[in-house]
Image (cartoon, rainbow, N blue to C red; front, top):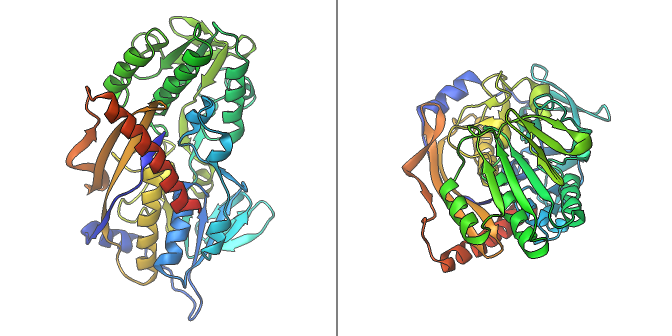
Length: 426
Protein backbone atom coordinates (compact mmCIF):
# COMPACT_ATOMS: atom_id res chain seq x y z
CA UNK A 1 0.00 0.00 0.00
CA UNK A 2 2.86 2.41 -0.49
CA UNK A 3 2.73 5.66 -2.47
CA UNK A 4 5.44 8.24 -3.12
CA UNK A 5 5.22 11.70 -1.58
CA UNK A 6 4.25 14.75 -3.58
CA UNK A 7 7.22 16.00 -5.57
CA UNK A 8 5.89 19.45 -6.35
CA UNK A 9 2.95 21.71 -5.62
CA UNK A 10 2.05 24.52 -7.98
CA UNK A 11 -0.71 26.90 -7.00
CA UNK A 12 -2.69 28.58 -9.82
CA UNK A 13 -5.53 31.08 -9.53
CA UNK A 14 -8.92 29.64 -10.37
CA UNK A 15 -12.47 30.81 -10.86
CA UNK A 16 -13.52 27.64 -9.05
CA UNK A 17 -11.67 28.85 -5.97
CA UNK A 18 -13.50 32.17 -6.09
CA UNK A 19 -16.80 30.32 -6.29
CA UNK A 20 -15.89 28.24 -3.25
CA UNK A 21 -15.18 31.37 -1.23
CA UNK A 22 -18.51 32.87 -2.23
CA UNK A 23 -20.31 29.69 -1.24
CA UNK A 24 -18.61 29.39 2.14
CA UNK A 25 -17.54 32.82 3.43
CA UNK A 26 -15.05 33.04 6.25
CA UNK A 27 -16.75 33.80 9.60
CA UNK A 28 -16.04 37.12 11.25
CA UNK A 29 -13.32 36.64 13.89
CA UNK A 30 -13.17 38.48 17.18
CA UNK A 31 -10.75 41.38 16.91
CA UNK A 32 -7.34 40.21 18.08
CA UNK A 33 -8.44 36.61 18.67
CA UNK A 34 -6.46 33.97 16.75
CA UNK A 35 -8.45 31.95 14.23
CA UNK A 36 -9.25 28.46 15.49
CA UNK A 37 -8.93 25.37 13.30
CA UNK A 38 -9.84 21.93 14.64
CA UNK A 39 -8.55 18.89 12.73
CA UNK A 40 -10.19 15.52 13.41
CA UNK A 41 -8.10 12.47 12.49
CA UNK A 42 -4.39 11.98 13.10
CA UNK A 43 -3.45 9.96 10.02
CA UNK A 44 -1.44 11.12 7.02
CA UNK A 45 -4.06 13.69 5.98
CA UNK A 46 -4.97 15.20 9.35
CA UNK A 47 -1.47 15.25 10.81
CA UNK A 48 -0.08 16.78 7.60
CA UNK A 49 -2.79 19.43 7.57
CA UNK A 50 -2.25 20.37 11.23
CA UNK A 51 1.49 20.86 10.74
CA UNK A 52 1.01 22.71 7.46
CA UNK A 53 -1.49 25.11 9.05
CA UNK A 54 1.07 26.09 11.68
CA UNK A 55 3.65 26.71 8.97
CA UNK A 56 1.23 28.65 6.77
CA UNK A 57 0.27 31.03 9.58
CA UNK A 58 1.64 30.56 13.12
CA UNK A 59 -1.18 32.77 14.44
CA UNK A 60 -3.72 30.02 13.74
CA UNK A 61 -4.59 28.02 16.85
CA UNK A 62 -4.59 24.43 15.61
CA UNK A 63 -6.06 21.53 17.60
CA UNK A 64 -5.64 17.95 16.39
CA UNK A 65 -8.23 15.52 17.75
CA UNK A 66 -7.29 11.83 17.60
CA UNK A 67 -8.75 8.97 19.61
CA UNK A 68 -5.59 6.83 19.65
CA UNK A 69 -2.20 7.71 21.20
CA UNK A 70 -0.38 6.01 18.31
CA UNK A 71 -1.20 5.81 14.62
CA UNK A 72 -0.70 2.53 12.74
CA UNK A 73 0.18 3.40 9.16
CA UNK A 74 -1.59 1.31 6.47
CA UNK A 75 1.30 1.57 3.96
CA UNK A 76 3.66 -1.38 4.42
CA UNK A 77 1.14 -3.16 6.66
CA UNK A 78 1.16 -6.13 4.30
CA UNK A 79 4.92 -6.30 4.72
CA UNK A 80 4.31 -6.55 8.46
CA UNK A 81 1.73 -9.30 7.90
CA UNK A 82 4.28 -11.22 5.81
CA UNK A 83 6.95 -10.80 8.47
CA UNK A 84 9.21 -8.53 6.39
CA UNK A 85 9.06 -5.73 8.98
CA UNK A 86 7.97 -5.50 12.60
CA UNK A 87 4.61 -3.92 13.37
CA UNK A 88 6.35 -1.28 15.50
CA UNK A 89 7.73 0.22 12.28
CA UNK A 90 4.13 1.04 11.33
CA UNK A 91 3.31 2.91 14.54
CA UNK A 92 3.84 6.62 15.20
CA UNK A 93 3.07 9.01 18.04
CA UNK A 94 2.31 12.73 18.07
CA UNK A 95 5.18 14.28 20.06
CA UNK A 96 6.71 15.94 17.00
CA UNK A 97 3.34 17.40 16.04
CA UNK A 98 3.02 18.88 19.53
CA UNK A 99 6.50 20.40 19.16
CA UNK A 100 5.31 22.04 15.93
CA UNK A 101 2.84 24.06 17.99
CA UNK A 102 -0.25 21.92 17.48
CA UNK A 103 -2.46 21.15 20.48
CA UNK A 104 -3.07 17.39 20.40
CA UNK A 105 -6.17 16.10 22.17
CA UNK A 106 -6.38 12.32 22.56
CA UNK A 107 -10.12 11.78 22.52
CA UNK A 108 -12.90 10.76 20.18
CA UNK A 109 -15.30 13.27 18.68
CA UNK A 110 -18.85 12.33 19.68
CA UNK A 111 -20.81 15.21 18.14
CA UNK A 112 -20.27 17.93 15.54
CA UNK A 113 -22.57 20.95 15.26
CA UNK A 114 -21.91 22.67 11.91
CA UNK A 115 -24.19 25.64 12.60
CA UNK A 116 -22.79 26.32 16.07
CA UNK A 117 -19.27 25.42 14.83
CA UNK A 118 -18.56 23.23 17.84
CA UNK A 119 -17.06 19.77 18.26
CA UNK A 120 -17.95 17.74 21.37
CA UNK A 121 -15.47 15.14 22.63
CA UNK A 122 -15.99 11.92 24.58
CA UNK A 123 -15.09 13.69 27.84
CA UNK A 124 -17.77 16.33 27.08
CA UNK A 125 -15.16 18.97 26.21
CA UNK A 126 -16.50 21.38 23.59
CA UNK A 127 -14.12 22.81 20.99
CA UNK A 128 -15.26 25.87 19.04
CA UNK A 129 -13.80 26.36 15.58
CA UNK A 130 -13.69 28.85 12.74
CA UNK A 131 -12.75 26.09 10.30
CA UNK A 132 -13.01 22.33 10.83
CA UNK A 133 -10.94 19.78 8.91
CA UNK A 134 -12.11 16.17 8.83
CA UNK A 135 -9.63 13.45 7.94
CA UNK A 136 -11.61 10.48 9.26
CA UNK A 137 -10.27 7.80 6.95
CA UNK A 138 -12.60 4.92 6.14
CA UNK A 139 -15.17 2.91 8.00
CA UNK A 140 -16.72 -0.41 6.98
CA UNK A 141 -20.22 -1.16 5.77
CA UNK A 142 -20.65 -3.87 8.35
CA UNK A 143 -24.08 -4.89 7.05
CA UNK A 144 -22.90 -5.39 3.47
CA UNK A 145 -21.73 -9.02 3.83
CA UNK A 146 -24.18 -11.35 5.63
CA UNK A 147 -22.39 -13.02 8.51
CA UNK A 148 -19.52 -10.53 8.67
CA UNK A 149 -19.61 -8.02 11.52
CA UNK A 150 -17.26 -6.61 14.15
CA UNK A 151 -17.32 -9.88 16.09
CA UNK A 152 -16.53 -11.87 12.94
CA UNK A 153 -13.42 -9.72 12.38
CA UNK A 154 -11.89 -11.33 15.47
CA UNK A 155 -11.90 -14.64 13.58
CA UNK A 156 -11.63 -13.50 9.96
CA UNK A 157 -9.63 -10.26 10.25
CA UNK A 158 -9.85 -7.40 7.78
CA UNK A 159 -6.42 -6.07 8.88
CA UNK A 160 -7.21 -2.90 6.96
CA UNK A 161 -7.15 0.06 9.35
CA UNK A 162 -6.24 -1.38 12.73
CA UNK A 163 -2.85 -2.41 14.15
CA UNK A 164 -4.37 -5.13 16.31
CA UNK A 165 -6.00 -6.63 13.22
CA UNK A 166 -2.70 -6.59 11.33
CA UNK A 167 -1.04 -8.41 14.24
CA UNK A 168 -3.90 -10.94 14.36
CA UNK A 169 -3.61 -11.81 10.68
CA UNK A 170 0.15 -12.19 11.09
CA UNK A 171 -0.33 -14.61 14.00
CA UNK A 172 -2.88 -16.64 12.06
CA UNK A 173 -0.46 -17.05 9.15
CA UNK A 174 2.29 -18.17 11.50
CA UNK A 175 -0.03 -20.71 13.17
CA UNK A 176 -1.43 -22.12 9.93
CA UNK A 177 -0.27 -25.60 8.99
CA UNK A 178 1.60 -26.04 5.72
CA UNK A 179 -0.92 -26.91 3.03
CA UNK A 180 -3.57 -24.51 4.29
CA UNK A 181 -5.40 -22.04 2.06
CA UNK A 182 -5.40 -18.28 2.63
CA UNK A 183 -8.51 -16.64 1.16
CA UNK A 184 -8.61 -12.86 0.66
CA UNK A 185 -11.79 -11.07 -0.36
CA UNK A 186 -11.32 -7.79 -2.22
CA UNK A 187 -14.23 -5.30 -2.25
CA UNK A 188 -15.67 -3.27 -5.08
CA UNK A 189 -14.43 0.27 -5.55
CA UNK A 190 -14.43 2.91 -4.20
CA UNK A 191 -12.12 1.65 -1.47
CA UNK A 192 -8.89 2.65 0.21
CA UNK A 193 -5.78 2.02 -1.92
CA UNK A 194 -7.15 -0.14 -4.77
CA UNK A 195 -3.87 -2.08 -5.42
CA UNK A 196 -3.47 -3.02 -1.75
CA UNK A 197 -5.36 -6.37 -1.72
CA UNK A 198 -3.13 -7.64 -4.55
CA UNK A 199 0.04 -6.41 -2.88
CA UNK A 200 -1.15 -8.29 0.21
CA UNK A 201 -1.77 -11.46 -1.79
CA UNK A 202 1.72 -11.14 -3.25
CA UNK A 203 3.52 -10.70 0.06
CA UNK A 204 1.52 -13.47 1.74
CA UNK A 205 2.50 -15.69 -1.21
CA UNK A 206 6.13 -14.74 -0.58
CA UNK A 207 5.76 -15.82 3.04
CA UNK A 208 4.12 -19.10 2.06
CA UNK A 209 6.73 -19.83 -0.61
CA UNK A 210 9.53 -19.49 1.93
CA UNK A 211 7.82 -20.94 5.02
CA UNK A 212 4.82 -23.08 3.94
CA UNK A 213 5.32 -24.02 0.29
CA UNK A 214 2.36 -26.45 0.08
CA UNK A 215 -0.08 -23.61 0.85
CA UNK A 216 -1.76 -21.20 -1.56
CA UNK A 217 -3.63 -17.88 -1.76
CA UNK A 218 -7.05 -17.36 -3.34
CA UNK A 219 -8.27 -13.81 -4.05
CA UNK A 220 -12.06 -13.51 -4.34
CA UNK A 221 -12.75 -10.23 -6.12
CA UNK A 222 -15.91 -8.13 -6.43
CA UNK A 223 -14.36 -6.59 -9.58
CA UNK A 224 -13.44 -7.80 -13.05
CA UNK A 225 -10.18 -5.89 -13.11
CA UNK A 226 -7.81 -3.99 -10.86
CA UNK A 227 -5.03 -1.40 -10.89
CA UNK A 228 -1.80 -2.59 -12.55
CA UNK A 229 -3.38 -6.00 -13.15
CA UNK A 230 -1.08 -7.05 -15.98
CA UNK A 231 1.97 -6.19 -13.91
CA UNK A 232 0.69 -8.10 -10.89
CA UNK A 233 -0.25 -11.17 -12.91
CA UNK A 234 3.09 -11.22 -14.73
CA UNK A 235 4.89 -11.02 -11.39
CA UNK A 236 2.73 -13.81 -9.93
CA UNK A 237 3.55 -16.02 -12.89
CA UNK A 238 7.25 -15.31 -12.51
CA UNK A 239 7.59 -15.42 -8.72
CA UNK A 240 4.67 -17.50 -7.45
CA UNK A 241 3.51 -19.97 -10.13
CA UNK A 242 0.53 -21.92 -8.85
CA UNK A 243 0.55 -20.07 -5.51
CA UNK A 244 -2.02 -17.32 -6.24
CA UNK A 245 -5.46 -17.83 -7.76
CA UNK A 246 -7.52 -14.74 -8.66
CA UNK A 247 -11.29 -15.23 -9.02
CA UNK A 248 -12.95 -12.29 -10.80
CA UNK A 249 -16.49 -10.98 -10.38
CA UNK A 250 -17.59 -12.63 -13.63
CA UNK A 251 -16.18 -15.95 -12.46
CA UNK A 252 -18.00 -15.83 -9.14
CA UNK A 253 -15.56 -13.83 -7.04
CA UNK A 254 -18.06 -11.55 -5.30
CA UNK A 255 -18.56 -12.52 -1.66
CA UNK A 256 -22.22 -13.16 -0.80
CA UNK A 257 -21.80 -14.28 2.82
CA UNK A 258 -19.38 -15.79 5.33
CA UNK A 259 -19.68 -18.66 7.78
CA UNK A 260 -17.50 -17.61 10.66
CA UNK A 261 -17.56 -20.89 12.61
CA UNK A 262 -15.97 -22.78 9.70
CA UNK A 263 -14.03 -19.88 8.14
CA UNK A 264 -15.96 -20.37 4.92
CA UNK A 265 -16.39 -17.63 2.31
CA UNK A 266 -19.50 -18.08 0.16
CA UNK A 267 -20.06 -16.72 -3.35
CA UNK A 268 -23.00 -17.23 -5.69
CA UNK A 269 -21.11 -20.10 -7.35
CA UNK A 270 -18.97 -21.78 -4.72
CA UNK A 271 -17.79 -22.07 -1.13
CA UNK A 272 -14.16 -21.55 -0.08
CA UNK A 273 -12.96 -23.11 3.16
CA UNK A 274 -10.04 -21.10 4.50
CA UNK A 275 -7.34 -21.90 7.01
CA UNK A 276 -6.84 -18.14 7.19
CA UNK A 277 -9.50 -15.72 5.93
CA UNK A 278 -8.79 -12.03 5.27
CA UNK A 279 -12.15 -10.36 4.60
CA UNK A 280 -11.85 -6.74 3.42
CA UNK A 281 -15.38 -5.31 3.61
CA UNK A 282 -16.97 -2.61 1.44
CA UNK A 283 -16.14 0.85 2.74
CA UNK A 284 -17.40 4.38 3.32
CA UNK A 285 -16.14 7.60 4.90
CA UNK A 286 -15.14 7.42 8.56
CA UNK A 287 -17.59 8.07 11.40
CA UNK A 288 -16.75 11.76 11.86
CA UNK A 289 -18.14 12.42 8.37
CA UNK A 290 -21.48 11.04 9.49
CA UNK A 291 -21.40 13.16 12.67
CA UNK A 292 -20.83 16.31 10.62
CA UNK A 293 -23.33 15.52 7.89
CA UNK A 294 -20.76 15.85 5.11
CA UNK A 295 -21.25 12.43 3.47
CA UNK A 296 -23.77 12.02 0.66
CA UNK A 297 -25.83 8.95 -0.26
CA UNK A 298 -22.73 7.18 -1.59
CA UNK A 299 -21.21 7.24 1.89
CA UNK A 300 -18.37 9.51 0.73
CA UNK A 301 -17.87 13.27 0.98
CA UNK A 302 -18.27 15.66 -1.96
CA UNK A 303 -15.76 18.53 -1.76
CA UNK A 304 -14.58 21.54 -3.69
CA UNK A 305 -11.32 20.30 -5.28
CA UNK A 306 -9.49 23.59 -4.73
CA UNK A 307 -10.01 24.02 -0.99
CA UNK A 308 -11.48 20.62 -0.03
CA UNK A 309 -14.39 22.52 1.49
CA UNK A 310 -17.46 20.35 2.00
CA UNK A 311 -20.25 20.87 -0.50
CA UNK A 312 -22.80 19.97 2.17
CA UNK A 313 -21.76 21.95 5.28
CA UNK A 314 -20.19 25.41 5.69
CA UNK A 315 -16.71 25.97 7.17
CA UNK A 316 -15.86 22.25 7.08
CA UNK A 317 -13.18 20.67 4.91
CA UNK A 318 -12.74 16.95 4.18
CA UNK A 319 -9.46 15.39 3.11
CA UNK A 320 -7.97 11.95 2.63
CA UNK A 321 -9.80 8.70 1.97
CA UNK A 322 -13.20 10.13 2.94
CA UNK A 323 -13.21 12.82 0.23
CA UNK A 324 -14.57 12.35 -3.28
CA UNK A 325 -11.54 13.52 -5.25
CA UNK A 326 -12.15 12.23 -8.76
CA UNK A 327 -9.19 10.40 -10.28
CA UNK A 328 -6.95 11.01 -7.30
CA UNK A 329 -6.37 7.71 -5.48
CA UNK A 330 -7.41 7.06 -1.89
CA UNK A 331 -3.90 6.65 -0.55
CA UNK A 332 -1.43 7.91 2.02
CA UNK A 333 0.33 10.05 -0.58
CA UNK A 334 -2.94 11.64 -1.68
CA UNK A 335 -3.97 12.33 1.92
CA UNK A 336 -0.57 13.84 2.71
CA UNK A 337 -0.72 16.19 -0.26
CA UNK A 338 -4.37 17.07 0.31
CA UNK A 339 -3.50 18.02 3.89
CA UNK A 340 -0.97 20.58 2.65
CA UNK A 341 -3.31 21.90 -0.05
CA UNK A 342 -6.20 22.23 2.40
CA UNK A 343 -4.00 24.03 4.94
CA UNK A 344 -2.86 26.56 2.35
CA UNK A 345 -6.46 27.15 1.28
CA UNK A 346 -7.67 27.64 4.86
CA UNK A 347 -4.86 30.08 5.66
CA UNK A 348 -5.88 32.18 2.65
CA UNK A 349 -9.57 31.97 3.48
CA UNK A 350 -8.95 33.09 7.06
CA UNK A 351 -6.97 36.00 5.66
CA UNK A 352 -9.88 36.97 3.42
CA UNK A 353 -8.19 35.76 0.23
CA UNK A 354 -9.41 33.18 -2.31
CA UNK A 355 -7.49 29.89 -2.39
CA UNK A 356 -5.52 28.95 -5.47
CA UNK A 357 -6.11 25.83 -7.58
CA UNK A 358 -3.39 23.23 -7.01
CA UNK A 359 -1.61 20.85 -9.33
CA UNK A 360 0.02 17.86 -7.68
CA UNK A 361 1.81 14.68 -8.65
CA UNK A 362 2.14 11.46 -6.70
CA UNK A 363 3.26 7.87 -7.10
CA UNK A 364 2.00 4.51 -5.88
CA UNK A 365 4.35 1.61 -5.19
CA UNK A 366 3.24 -1.98 -4.66
CA UNK A 367 5.64 -4.58 -3.29
CA UNK A 368 5.42 -8.00 -4.89
CA UNK A 369 8.43 -9.38 -3.01
CA UNK A 370 11.09 -7.77 -0.78
CA UNK A 371 13.22 -7.00 -3.85
CA UNK A 372 10.46 -6.56 -6.45
CA UNK A 373 8.01 -3.65 -6.79
CA UNK A 374 5.83 -2.01 -9.41
CA UNK A 375 4.53 1.55 -9.50
CA UNK A 376 2.11 4.02 -11.00
CA UNK A 377 2.63 7.78 -11.12
CA UNK A 378 0.22 10.53 -12.04
CA UNK A 379 -0.34 14.27 -12.01
CA UNK A 380 -3.72 15.68 -10.94
CA UNK A 381 -5.46 19.03 -11.17
CA UNK A 382 -9.03 20.30 -10.79
CA UNK A 383 -11.04 20.17 -14.02
CA UNK A 384 -14.84 20.52 -14.10
CA UNK A 385 -15.07 20.48 -10.31
CA UNK A 386 -13.08 17.30 -9.71
CA UNK A 387 -9.50 16.05 -9.89
CA UNK A 388 -8.51 14.54 -13.22
CA UNK A 389 -5.29 13.04 -14.51
CA UNK A 390 -3.18 15.59 -16.33
CA UNK A 391 0.02 15.71 -18.39
CA UNK A 392 -0.68 12.57 -20.40
CA UNK A 393 -2.26 10.47 -17.69
CA UNK A 394 -0.71 7.85 -15.44
CA UNK A 395 2.79 6.50 -15.94
CA UNK A 396 2.99 2.81 -15.07
CA UNK A 397 6.00 0.52 -14.68
CA UNK A 398 7.09 -1.10 -17.93
CA UNK A 399 5.56 -4.53 -18.44
CA UNK A 400 8.85 -6.24 -19.32
CA UNK A 401 11.37 -4.40 -17.16
CA UNK A 402 14.47 -6.30 -16.00
CA UNK A 403 14.67 -7.48 -12.41
CA UNK A 404 17.17 -4.70 -11.64
CA UNK A 405 14.44 -2.16 -12.31
CA UNK A 406 11.97 -4.02 -10.11
CA UNK A 407 14.59 -4.15 -7.35
CA UNK A 408 15.25 -0.42 -7.70
CA UNK A 409 11.54 0.28 -7.38
CA UNK A 410 11.42 -1.82 -4.21
CA UNK A 411 14.23 0.32 -2.78
CA UNK A 412 12.33 3.45 -3.82
CA UNK A 413 9.23 2.14 -2.06
CA UNK A 414 11.17 1.78 1.18
CA UNK A 415 12.69 5.23 0.79
CA UNK A 416 9.26 6.72 0.15
CA UNK A 417 7.83 5.18 3.31
CA UNK A 418 10.68 6.48 5.45
CA UNK A 419 10.37 9.93 3.89
CA UNK A 420 6.61 10.38 4.21
CA UNK A 421 6.44 9.09 7.78
CA UNK A 422 9.33 11.35 8.77
CA UNK A 423 7.67 14.37 7.14
CA UNK A 424 4.36 13.72 8.90
CA UNK A 425 5.32 12.27 12.29
CA UNK A 426 8.99 13.09 12.99
